[in-house]
Structure formats: C-alpha cells, structure tokens
Image (cartoon, rainbow, N blue to C red):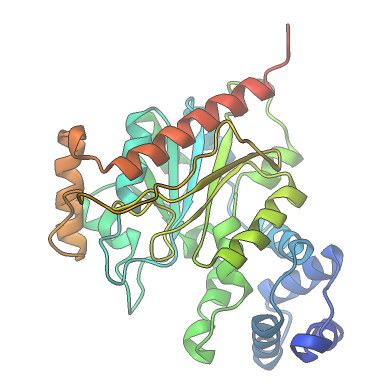
Amino acid sequence: MGIAAHIKVIGRGKDGARPLSREQAHDLMSQVLDGQVTDLEIGAFCLAMRIKGETPDELIGFLQATTERCIDLRAALPSATGGVVLLPSYNGSRKLPNLTPLLAWELARRGVGVLVHGPSEDPTRITSAQVFAAGGWPRVKDAAQLSSSWQAGQPAFIDITDLCPSVARLLAVRWTVGLRNPAHTIVKLLDPFARFAQEEPMRSEEATPPRLRVINHTHPEYGESLAGFIALSGADALLMRGTEGEPVADARRQPRFDVFLRGQRQDALSRAPVEGVLVSLPDLPEGREADITADWIESVRHEPALLPAAIEAQADCLVQALAQARRSATPAL
C-alpha cells in the first residue's frame, strides 16, 4: 500500500503542506504502526509532520489508530471504584526531581486508580519508571496485575513497550533521526481503555468508572492546539503546563489547570495559576536521582503535611473533576 500519497499532502513545507482528514490520518498511522511501510517512508513522515505540525483532526485519527493497538486492560476497570487518572510520563526530569510518582501516590491515597505509562529509560532524563523501580512500587504488564495494584490502593506503572509495542517502536525513531515525531504527542493523549469501552460497554456505572487524562504541554501555543483536540474529541481531561514535560504541577508554583468534561471547559473546576513573587519554597528532594526521589516520596507518604501545595491542588482538582464526571454520567431519577 504505502503512504506516499499521504506524504505528498503533508510534505510540502510549512506553507505548502495541507492537513490530512481524520480518516487519512488513521490510515497513515495504521500502516506505520503495522510495519507496512519502509524505514524511508517513516523518516519522511516524521520529518514532514515535525515541520507542518498536527491538526486536531489528525491527532484524533493518529490516536484512534494507536489506541486500537493497545493491549486490553478493560478487566481492571471495575477495580477503580474511585475513578481512573491516566498520567502519561514521557519526558522525565532533566533538572528537577520527577514528582509524577508522588502525584500518583497522592491520588491513590484518595481512592483513585492511577495508571502511569511511559518509557522505562531515557538516556538524558530520570524517568518515572526508574523512580517506581527505586521505590519498589508496582510495575504491571497486563490487566490482572493492574487490577491487583488498584485493589491494594497502589498506583501502577506500565511500560509503553508493554502497553503498545508498535507505538514504542515509532517513539524510538527519535534516537535515529534526532527529532520527536507525532508519536510523542499521541502517547500523551492516550486512553488505552477508550476503544474497549466503545466496543463493549459495561453494564453498570460501577463497572465503568470515570476516567481523566492529564494532558500537559510545554509551550502556550501548543496548549491551544491541545485544547482544540480536547474540544473536538469530547475528552475528559485536565490540561496544564507540565513540569519539564511531565504531567505533574511544578512543586514551587501551581500552574493553571483547565478541566474539560466531554470536551467542554469547566470553569467551576478549573483553577487559575498562582501568580506573584514566591515568598517560600517547599521542601524538595536534595537531588533528582531516582533513589533519592523515591525515598523522599516515601517520606511524604508517611507525613502528608510535607506534600507540596501545588501538587495537593492538582490532586484536589482531579478528584473533584472525577466526582463531577461521575455525577454527569449517572442518569437522573
């Protein structure tokens, strides 16, 4: 089959390129993920999209193709009675401690089923997987292990190579061409439960707990395009500026939180950023290494008063959003 026709549309430079339809994007990504194209075509696709940028419709098509190739985790859903929060952790920490696992533990303490997904290693960063490993916390490979973690009140991490091997291979193209590609955006939007919920709906509200994705960005203009994706796709999500690209609030200063339910921004649930001059800084790990970070997170777990206010605010926001999503999904009597 090949994807030459699609590359011809997207590969004409910043001003000459045209967007793909949702169906075209789905077809293109399906062929890439299924290994039906050559390495040269994959390189052309990655570079063309890097120059052009993705439209919301393209993101939806790419995401649908990727979600269809995720492993089946739906059997774990009934274990998450407090709802599910998905934390895509793909950037890791470069200068600051990686506190995504801390947010995961705080949400789990509040009865939320938390799934962190991302790579196990990054040659330039400290990953959430490494912090989970250093803390001896659950790393899962299937629905049964995920269910066990949630039943025990623990968050879980799953490697993207286990969750969706084909998109993991596309992510790895970065280390060959030196640039990120659409897969790096798609995995941050991923809800691996989505297509299974559509294909085979559960029979009760208890069996289908509400789910929220934390979608983060590093540049304001990219936040605008992601908001467009959320609105067009009707997603339930918290959109925010991440900490070094991680889906956790900067412990030093709370960013803006935009909560969307069914694609609509919820003013009452969203939160303005903390402005002004910082008068104090929270206690943080003395280094960014995985073992130091994990030890510090353990100390916060045993003394919740040490939880940075910004991360506490993010957890509050997510729990309130889950509660609203549950109420909205419950039929009126």
